[in-house]
Image (tube, rainbow, N blue to C red; front, side, top):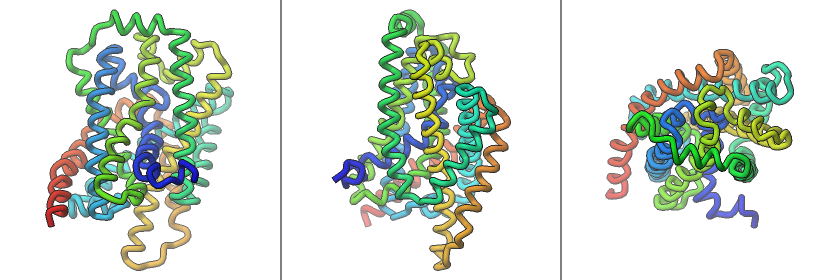
Length: 368
């Protein structure tokens, strides 16, 4: 039996892998996100923010969310949020769709920048190429998306580990020097940075709910949630440590990862890493768009109506067209302004409800 189809792997690790695959493009794919929320506090401060605040926040919220999904058998975000917030679910949906458009805008901008930096062609070639790949993947449904995301995540982890090893081999002295000599910047600001980073990424959880169907018990769902936080943040931590070798100059770089790869003077690694990153952008785009098309299809099923054949392709094209427009605003502006606002929006429309109403309803359902 393949590890990708084993029951334990599907129960405990697939949710985390899909979560990580959806997080990466908006969370740390280009490295710009880590600069925005962590590097300003110095190597130590940034590491504390990621390893303590963001990791724990993701694990706890994922665990509660997965448990809620399992207990009430809600595997798409509309039914999930209606169970959680009643009529208030509409507020979340508005915020979630805006979030998806912003993240996909970042994905499109990143894809265009990667292709431009590697091959010198127009950014729209990368953007359109990514959009076509996302469209084809979404058209094939959740089973293929799960398999592709799971398989590609192994490739991603391998390349990230290789990247970190090469970074240490080439710049271990700089990394160690900066960790040893640069004090924590901004006082306890790293706490706020860790929370903001965690909060804006939490909308991703809703895109992972279909994987909780594999859980056979609430304990399975909670365990998968705790593991998800670790799987989700580990590549980001690895990347941040490597980036610290270039502190503080890296703060001004639009594509910090590409900047580091150029400094390594290893063209083969630059191409390998960026190709893998391009694949993860496709993962993120397909995962987020599928969460919306799945919700639309679930609405027809709930009304015992046939799902129109045109629904998924039309919705996918509309979403991709909107995000390609957003990508024209530029990567740095989308990350600094769009993500910063969404962090606090999700704190109010998701974090507070799931930790209060969610926990209460889970306990009440278990008691009953």
